Length: 78
Ligand SMILES: [Cu+2]
Image 1 (cartoon, protein in one colour):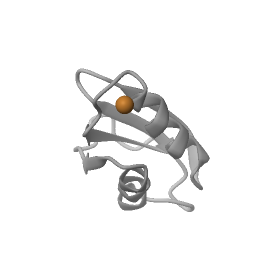
Image 2 (cartoon, rainbow, N blue to C red):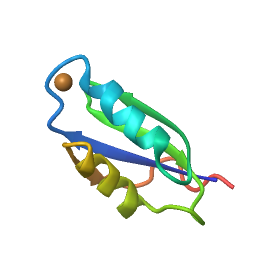
Image 3 (cartoon, protein in one colour):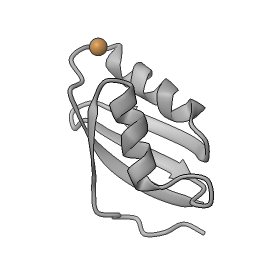
Image 4 (cartoon, protein in one colour):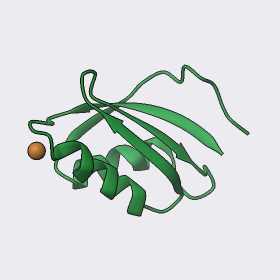
């Protein structure tokens, strides 16, 4: 398992985190996703055989938001 953090751009109300979180939860390879506001971030635990940070950004974009990949602070979780 890998963990990655994304910066989220475009959340505007209290429903937005749930929208993004649901999109991430439904996408292939995502084990768990936690979306927070202020700072607007998503912490995603995923299986890198099924998905990648770039694909996770795409999932966020398809949900109607923007995302930037942040440097991996916690390192790779095996
Ligand atoms: Cu909203």
